[in-house]
Image (cartoon, rainbow, N blue to C red; front, side, top):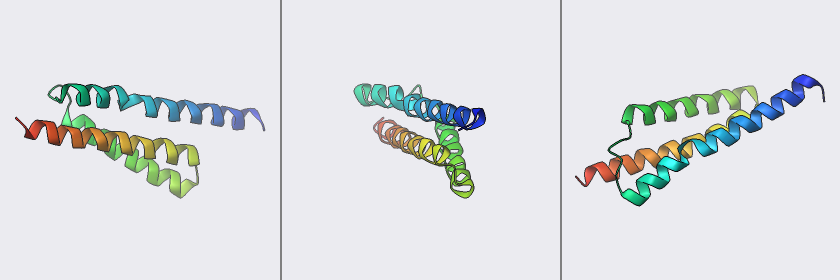
Length: 91
């Protein structure tokens, strides 16, 4: 594997890890406090749309790092959107 290939794998893993770590603290905090007052709906929908778009791009281009890191992004942003809807409705 050449330098470009190795760099692609390294940065693919970095992207995957940062995507996984990205919203987990927010999901946990919202779960514990049952509050999402300090979370922007626009930011959550932006994260969802971004992950969705990158997932489609990854599928089209055959880049599995892009696909899987953004599927995780879809799951975390979807979870937070659901939390926001549930917890904001209770008020």
